[in-house]
Image (cartoon, rainbow, N blue to C red; front, side, top):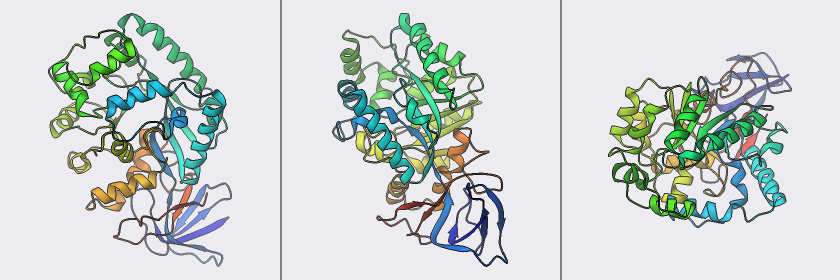
Length: 387
């Protein structure tokens, strides 16, 4: 048994009183939390002690594309870059990149990941059980006649992942799927956790409102044919979200250009929503950040993700937190840390095991030595894994 204290202890929702002592088994399970103890062998940590971080949105299978696509090209050119480069690597190179990326997350104090997959490239690494995963197998396809075949293929991939950890079939984004595919995936999402990329750029809303803009260039490049998108005259989220009506909960990812009216619309629906922000990826692709204070004002349940190494320099939740603190310094640190812990655990359905310091849980435990109450994390602050 180990007895741990720290200058500051954050339990996933709040800071615990001074002199709190955590009793932790060798395997990392918390067995007691006391404000006083008679134990003489208490180990005291400088700075902040807290549950391990949870990365609510990643694309581990794209790790081999690190530094391949220039920054700040905009989403459409970024997606064209993914399409251009993703298959220009050997299986050995892809596997090495996946292994290195997972190790990066481990070093950076991440204990669980909501990971997007289109195939089985990440399967063998995930089976090692070094991190907890929920794999979202992504469906993409604009041709109505191919929807059934593509969804069935995704079902097979998801079933393979599900032999070792939870997995769901999800839609990539509202602009990249046919109506038939949306109906099929929705029908198969009953009581499951779902995820979708939402309003990552202005061009997405333009496509839905008027049927024009940069996405037509993407469709032409991918389909090698003219594609006539049926626009709705409404923003993206107000065009599709009502159609996703059976999932237990939905993670909306990015939300870079989501407006007050969009959130108001989402809040009128009887849905359990989590709003995932990936600040460093948003800067990398669009040089723009979502309006996080607006999300907070509207009562959105926020979680944090890194996106992929194709769109980020690191898989590092602390780096995402630093970016939020830099641009939105008024947000309390307790709120941001809860997004990276208990909120993200709830989003991935893992809140009974991780995400908070509670008796019986094995949440992982990390130390951030350079922490001063009321101050943002220092630029050189790093994470050390305790469990």
